[in-house]
Image 1 (tube, one colour):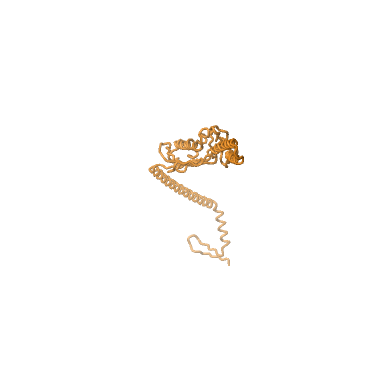
Image 2 (cartoon, one colour):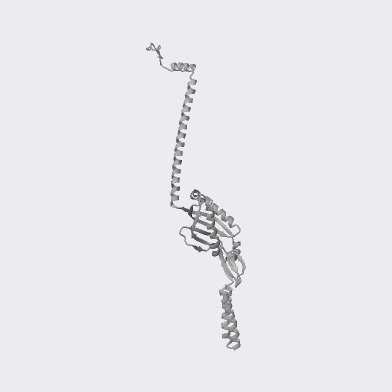
Length: 304
């Protein structure tokens, strides 16, 4: 806009000088040279104000000299506008809201850093939470957002970042201390679902939410670690008990199998079977001894 004003001033000056030279009837060549030069410069300056470049990942809001809006563009390329209009860039790529320990407040093309979020869980216990939210702006919403907030930085600082901080606090109150320490994924999903619902008509799209860390007072952390250790020990004892029970059941099954096998064998050895085994043994032996009950052998036969 400043260049446009300068160009207009040069153009007015060129016309004024040309008219004054003609009135004074000086050398025509000299008289017309200066205003022509000023005129050319004016045209170049005003022409430059009519061209702007829009990069990929940007939306541009066009604002008239009086402050009224003249529309917006969302496609990258070289664009043209009226010389009295300003082209205001809005970054519509994925941007990061990042709250973490010892962070300084800083804004950079849609991204925003801030101090860690202080939360209270469902029992009222206080903790510090580091959270990251990746978001983007709907290109079709930039004209309305500019009308409401003026600049993207003002919008992110006063609306987006504040919503992330407040939503993190609200969602934390739905989780217990143990849940926050052991299930950050569910906590992050709760934040994302709440932001998605809250921003449904605002032009902001939630891409992802990540809870990086939750820090309780050291006494609470120590108590949790002790409880975890006791739980691990209890689980180990239960595992050992289960193993011993399985081994006992296995031995019982093996013993029962042996007993059943012996029973079947005993039931199969009838008198007839035993006699047949005796006869087969005699037939297959080279020497047979006949021994009266309680005496030495009195008969010896040989196959030879």
